[in-house]
Length: 84
Image (cartoon, rainbow, N blue to C red; front, side, top):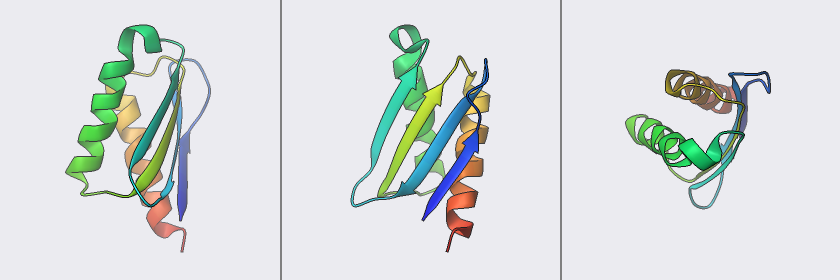
């Protein structure tokens, strides 16, 4: 199962999530040297809130704010659930 949400436009992010044997998070960000830890925390917290485990998450960030990252991840999670 796989879900994708967002875009690679400026101030946005493209998030891909799919089922996996363990949880992994990959972050590629143009502002990663400054905000990597904050992006990682946003993704981890959102997964925890949704009780989501054993997924692979790829974040391709173009300077998105925390609420954008969270909303894109939530949408990708819903799309992953629908991909049956």
